[in-house]
Image (cartoon, one colour):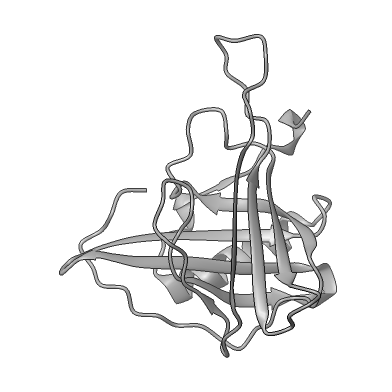
Length: 174
């Protein structure tokens, strides 16, 4: 997703991550992490509070085993992690890099279906910003309507067009 000529206006609600690290599947997302070709499948995150320090939040972002059409072998997974002090409401500042977004904001949680929506926004200049958004769940077996509802909600908060979201293809996972 290319930067847009707007400013980032943060907007989020009080949502707190689970107390222990848990695996989440990124079901739908905007293509905003500059992920190399072949890494859009099998996108996983571990998300939660560290066991030893309840005031710290840890997020591991894993792009598991993308495949290259020109190679017979799978490429190596891309990984990253961040541990930051917990804040209320929950916000993470992540150093800019090719794979991490900046200023993650969890906006909606569907506890009955174990899904949540979050987005990021980074001011790249006086009139240029970069945004991205993700819907993740603890299972890939989630009704499409639930994911679409969360997509619409995070879209309204972040001003990201719902048409910019793509589905993660877990059928391609090893």
